[in-house]
Length: 348
Image 1 (cartoon, one colour):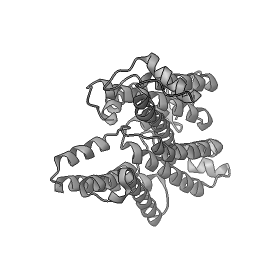
Image 2 (image 1 turned 90 degrees about the vertical axis):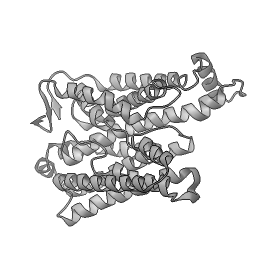
Image 3 (image 1 turned 30 degrees about the horizontal axis):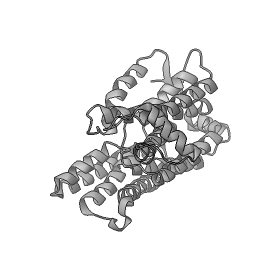
Image 4 (image 1 turned 30 degrees about the vertical axis):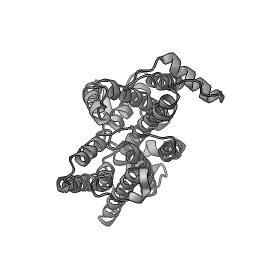
């Protein structure tokens, strides 16, 4: 996607977004079923970072419960934005999102099996994430094998395989819910499918954070190749890029990243769709400029989505996917309504 007009400088925008995201993370710790004064929140964070003795009655709530989920929101927002940008480049489609290849639906099968059938019970608190990760990786592997068997990882084959398998996996998950006699299990499945960062712990941050760092830095390292791939396979080949190997590597990397994110947060829509487009409008379509802005904006966006989901229906929480859908749909339509807006050299 390219946009005409003046581009904004990347570094100041990234710095501003990162500062806002970090400040918002601290502020978000004050919100929840029990409101905590912001001064107490800052006091707890300062004491923990400085290694001082615990002196606040809110220490456990702030440090052990709310801070991990706020950091997970940061990670998920950045990861989904990068994943969406990579998926749009991989299939050269402006409507692609991180879940295009059926990864979310595959994860829902694994998660539903854990919730309704009690699979992986020996994994304890890791059972749900483990089942979702297995399902996500299985879905990605199925799309890869089917596409390769049909002639290669072309954008059309990947999209069609992903859409078909996504429908199939969604049906399987729905069937397992239908067979379950436990209404609470059905509600848990529905809540998970719509996305949540509740229940985050410090240990559960390791997998998604590691995947985000490795894949994000890897995509930045090959930003020129990704630009060439976005321009088309003929252009990429003329520039000496091995499109087949690049597509395979990008497919695997995105599968790992999105699988790790879905395993800990469920399916949160629209983030990976709208944030890459917004970043391209701000700073241009090249991946070197767009990826950092999309990641920082996604983190900031998800922090406030988490806050909204906690306070709107307090003491209950709204699934994150509901909030992102309500916000994301009109925002995306506004972005698409801009004049002189194109993707990969084509009018979008």
